[in-house]
Image (cartoon, rainbow, N blue to C red; front, side, top):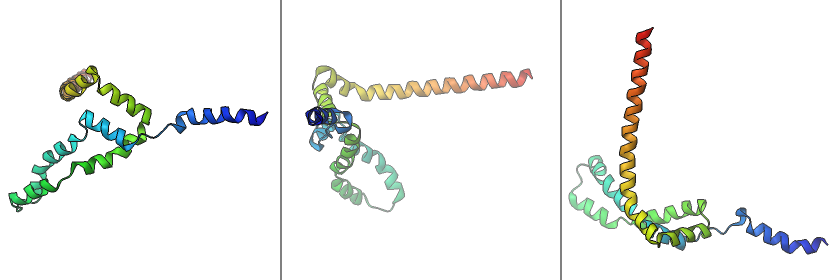
Length: 145
């Protein structure tokens, strides 16, 4: 009787989230490529370059040109893949890859940088409004006492 339950327990154990298949490096890299996550390393490096040049002001421009030529954004992708694998299963990454192939997914990728930028600006305005409100309330309380 107990042996008859074994196939059911095995199916149950391997269908539970604890045994979900880890996302493959290949499918994660596809996701990163579709969403432009791999390009973030190049953008980050370009943004860091002025600060790096300030740290070593004596370095000639040829040093920086050579350094940038050796910079491999794939290194950052390789470092990031395990992070995606930590939070997403293979099934989830496949579903995301399929979504990003749809017209809606492609549009989201295209407009997301603008959404993020405008959201940050809106958040800054909101923060300023909250700060002003807090200051006014505090001042009105201290003047009334």
